[in-house]
Image (tube, rainbow, N blue to C red; front, side):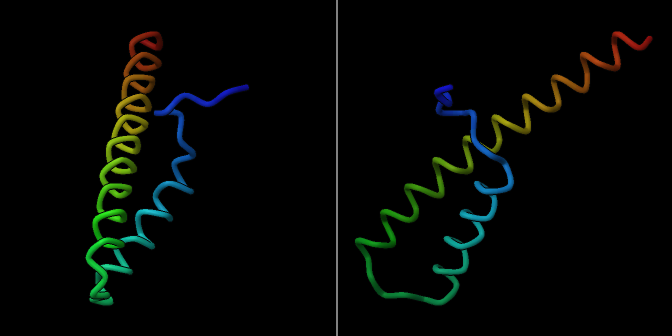
Length: 67
């Protein structure tokens, strides 16, 4: 099964985002690497937000059926 772009493993994506944040906190001076990491972090943040939105919508749907 092929995963969609927004079908990210939440825990792994969040862990990767934490690693990127740690890299920036260390103050590495490599501008090019920083730009790549910033771009990846932006992609991860967007995908993780989409997963959270999907989960929230699913919870709302379940609650509405339960009433």
